Length: 605
Image (cartoon, rainbow, N blue to C red; front, side, top):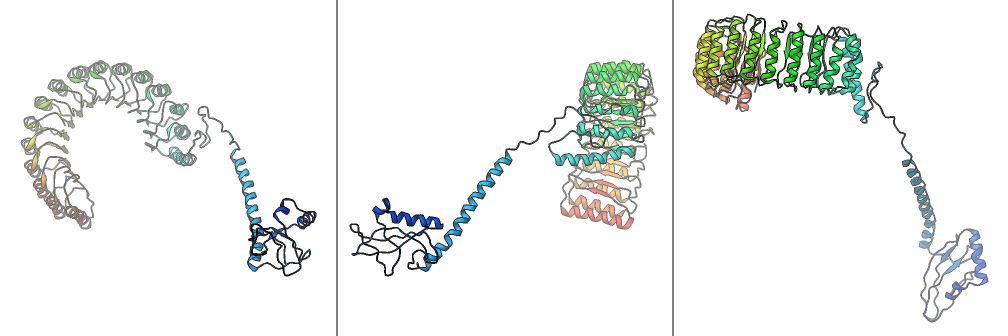
């Protein structure tokens, strides 16, 4: 043998008789019976020990036949140096040669797997170092050091980068708009440093950033150092009453801010009270906006008390609160003594007719109010009577909003009669007041001789074709109306014809709103014909929600192409029924006007 190997071989033998193994050559191989296996002789043990010392052993399968029978035997063999024997077959040589390397690889892989497994388990059990927990926010002037740690590291890095950009803007620009970025309290602590160092920023908008009462503490020391800041907008941040109190403490001695916007910030009566105490001492704030908060009668009473002592504030916005008649009564009392207020915004407070009576009573002692917003306040025709009474007396009122009340035809007739004696009001909003054609006819008669009114809102009133006819007959050659809004007025195609005829001659109307009037293609064609005539005034036309189809779109497109001197720059045709053909026609009209006149028309559909 070339090498000794341990092999297994099976021989068949007679179940009753064991014969010696036949061998044709002399060999040291010898037979081992079943008995000798259990009780080996001294020679067998000696041979087995020598094979162990050599480091290898093999079981060689030898066939032995005797007397037609055979049995299973194990043959131990050594190499040629000890006892030469017949060479095994080539197949057995290949098997014996490959068995040892394969076994070695298997053993090595098993040991390596065990070692690596132990290492991995050991690594997983290593406890991570504990991070220090931030207890509050510490302010620092080092860039980025005021941001508290965040578990989302990537987001944190992006936030820091963005805040650094904001900080640079805050350092050098006069008007800074950072609204809607939601950087929270951490962000405002970081940006406060730049705001403190900037002596040029005059208008800063921080609305909609998730700033709470805690974040407002970042302004401690900042508002006292920055004297250039004139307008601060914190609207849309949930600062609540606590934030209002904190801000009030900071603004008591501030000598720069003139406009403070705290709309939709969750301020209630307690916050309004804190701001009122601040207004009694602050002499610089001119505009205070508290729209869409939770201020009830007690808050209104507190603010009214501030108006009694503060004669510097010029505009106060309390839209969308809960003042009611009692809140209006307190404001009316304050107006009797306050001499500085020029604008009063009380839209959506449910003050009713009684509230209007008490406010106009306070206004009767002064004639210098320029703006009054009483929209959406449950005012009826009786309330319109009190308003008309004030209109006759005022010498400075320019803007009057009665939007979404219910004054009706009777109320509008009272106001129209008062306008005969008023030569100051330039903007009048009577939208959504249940006004019909008779009310508009009364108003149209006044417009014939009124040269001051520039903007008239009559939307959401069922004036119909008769009402628009009366209005257009006057505006064709009279009046100074520049903005006319008649959306949702049920004028139909017939009313569109009256408007189109008016536009052929009118020289003042620049903005016309005719949305949702059921004009259809017929009404659009009428308006298109008027646009073909030279009109150098009308710049904005809104025909949305009018059930206009491709036929109407083609007519409008042709009108835009035909009139080289057309002044229209904005045409709104949204929410109509155009197919791609109508859209293509309008798009081609845009290109044509640009190519021929080098002017752009914004058409939305």
